[in-house]
Image (cartoon, rainbow, N blue to C red; front, side, top):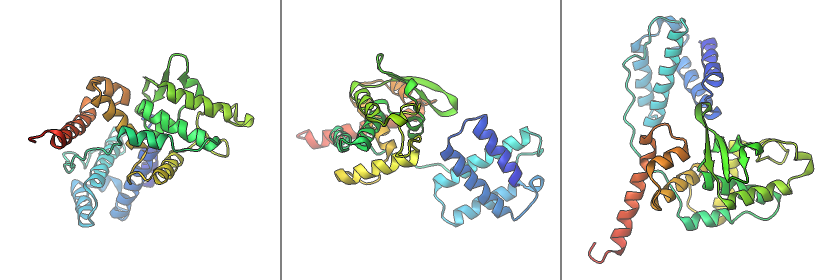
Amino acid sequence: MERYIEKFLNYLRIEKNYSEHTLVNYTIDLKYFSFFLEGKPLEEISHLDIRRFLAELKMKNFSKKTIARRISCLRSFFKFLVREGYIENNPTFGLRAPKLDKKLPLFLTVDEVNKLIESPDNDLPGLRDKAILETIYSTGMRISELVGLNIEDIDFIGGAVKVRGKGKKERFVPIGDRALTAIKNYLSARSPIFKESKAVFLNKQGRRLTARGVRLLIDKYVHRTALREKISPHTLRHSFATHLLERGADLRTVQELLGHTSLSTTQIYTHITAERLKEVYARTHPRA
């Protein structure tokens, strides 16, 4: 089982260009499934085994989101095994994932965003952190896209940035003057020994900053500014999309900026703006 899992993960990493975050989750999911099987040969796994596995997940009170991800993982895994000729039948065929509850993404107000962005100090780490906050909010890029950003990807004259998204897809998105200025200030202040690095955002050792590093620094400034809890880099991405729609941007444009493959993924933000309108109406209309 282990060697098939490794072959599958290598396929996702090399051919499908899955993010490290997804690869880590799929590794956990498959190893959990392998442990559940207690050494049962791959070719003997049946649809009943899959159903028993899902029943155990429900019995142990795993969330619907986790169960849905594990179903998706197993579907992809066994589809890969059939295609490569390792097994003949796919035991996950016809398997349905639990229907997930749609939760509205958390976002910040414009004032909260401004407060967060202005919170870093004026030393080198602070210049870097401000550039990171400005860039996420200005472009709406994912954290994996941010840490993968290279200096050559930024068009400082044209005000655009090349973003490498999911599945090796590239897109060009506008970037605002404030974000560009913050990036320039940070790059100018960087140590000469790091000048040769092609990465935009570096850690103290001069290596490319990780997604975990970005999460930690945002936690730091959320705590410093006493903003709401559970604010993440993705919250700035949600805020970017929400604020654009509130100010008249059309859904298709926001979809392109976010790098969503399907418009239905972007439509969640229309629910946010609708709820916001209801709140404003209820608070301000004299006969609401």
